[in-house]
Image (cartoon, rainbow over all chains, first blue to last red; front, side):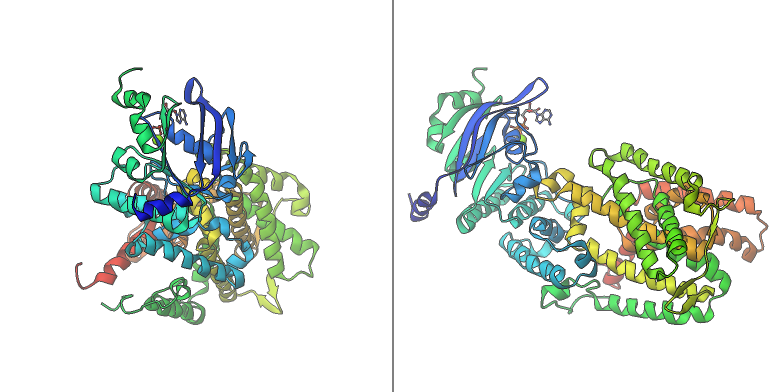
Length: 267
Length: 354
Ligand SMILES: Nc1ncnc2c1ncn2[C@@H]1O[C@H](COP(=O)(O)OP(=O)(O)OP(=O)(O)O)[C@@H](O)[C@H]1O
Ligand SMILES: [Mg+2]
C-alpha cells in the first residue's frame, strides 16, 4: 500500500448509514429482498450486480424516492421511515442519476446553483426586489458554486443551456449539482456509464478527489469492474434483489456466488 | 461588429449577475424607456392608445403572470382569465366599499386576493399533471363565471349584472386621458417586469424551473414541490389578478362577467405559446402580436386598396392564429422570443460568419 492509501484507510470511521432487512416490491416484482448493509464514514462503498439486480432501487430507498415495505434505515444513529426525498436531502444525502436528470432548460450555472436551494432562505419579497439578504445570498452561493465549477473543470460551459452539452459533460454537471449540496453522503448511480476511457479516468479522479478533499462518503454503482476494484473500499453485490456478497474487493472477487452470478452459471 | 460582450470582463459575481450584463443591452434598454415614457405620448393618437397600446400593456402583464406558471414552472392552466376576474371584482368591491383606499393599495390587495384563490386552485397540481391539471384549472374558469354572474353582492346588486368604475386617481393625479392611462400602465408594467425578472433569476425561480424540467430530481436535491408549485400559482395569479383589475378599471371602465370568459383564457395561452414559453420578453411579443394582428388585418387591405369584409378579416385572424400556434408548438416551442435570440446571436457574430 502506498502512503495515500494508508492515510485513506485511517480516515474511515464508524457506520453512518445502515440498512436492515430492507424489502421492496413493485406489484409482483421483488426489487429488493431482505437486504442489509452499512456504509462507514469517509469510505467509497460500491454496489455491483447484473442488470435489474436492484442497485438503483437501493439508492432510491436511501433517498426516499421509494419507501420499502419492510426493513429499517438508520442514518447517523437515527432511524427513518417514509422520509420525503427533500427531507433526506436536507439531512445531507445527495445523489446523481443513472439516466441524466438535469434541468434541461436551465444553464449549467443555474443547474448547479439549484443544488444550493436548500441552503437559501431569503423570502419571496426580498427576492422580488433583489435587495439585502437576497442579493447577498445569491453572491455567496455563487462563490461556492464557482469553486465546484473550477474543481470539475467546466468553466467554459457556465452559461450554456445544459441540454446542449455532450453526454460526458452532462454527467459532470450532474455531479456538480450533487456536490453543491455539500453532502455528507454522495450516492452515484453509474457515473461513468457510456463514457470513453479518458472521460472515465477523469470521472474517477473527481470522485476520489471529492472523497479525499471533502471527506465525503461515497456510495457508487458501477458496472466497470476494473474501476470498482480500483477505487472502492468495500463492495456490496446484489443479484435478483438479494445480497450475494459483501466485503473488500479481494474478498468479493474470490466469492463463489459472485463469480457464478457474473458468469451466469447457476440461476 | 458593435454588439459584443468581448472586452467587458466581469471582475465580480455581482456584476456578472446583473439583469443586463452586456453594456449595449443596457444602453438599448435605456433608450427604449426614454422613448416609451418621453416620446410616445407626444405623437401617438388616442386611437392607437386605446385600441393598441393600452390593451397591449395590460395583456403583457397578464401574459407574464401566466408565463410564470406555465413557462417557468411547467404547470398548465387553461382557466387563467378566472384570476383576472377575481382581481377585477376584488378591486371593484374594494374601491366601492373602501373609497378612501389609494388605488395602488386596491391593486395590490386585489392581486393578493387573486393569489389566494390561485393557491386554492393550484392544490390539485400537487397530485396531478398535464391534461388532468388542465381540466382542474378549467374548473376555476367555470367557478368564477358562475360566482360573479350569480352572487349579486359582487356586482353590488346591479340589475344588468354589469359594473362600472370611475376614473382612477393617484395622489391627486386623475388618470383620465388615453396618454395618462398609457403612462400609468407603462409604469406598472416596468415595475412588474423587473420584479418578475428578479424572481425568475432568484432561488425561487430555479425551484420553479426545476419543477418544469425534472420534478423527481428537484425533490432529491432538496426542493419542496409543494412550495415551488404553490408559490408559482400564487405569484402567477397575483400578476394576472392585477392585470384583471387594470383591464376592468383602465381599459374597459365598465364590464360584465362575460368579459373574463374562456376565450380570454385561451388568448392568454396563445400569447405565451406564440411569444415564448419561459421568457418575459416573449410575453411582450405574444401580447403585441395578439393585439396587433386583428387591427393589422383590418387596416392592411385598406392601405392596399383591397376590399375585405370584417367577417373575412376576423376569419383570417383566426386562421393565422391557428396556423401560428401549430407552427410554434411543432417547430419553435420557445416562440418569437427564441427567434429574437437567434437573431441577436447572429448579430453578435456579424459580420464574421463564425
Ligand atoms: N418504478 C418501478 N416500477 C416497477 N418496477 C420497477 C420500478 N423500478 C424498478 N423496478 C424493477 O425493479 C427491479 C430492479 O430495478 P433497478 O432499476 O433497481 O435495477 P438495477 O440494478 O439498477 O439495474 P440496471 O443495472 O439496469 O440499472 C427491476 O426488475 C425493475 O424492473
Ligand atoms: Mg440502475
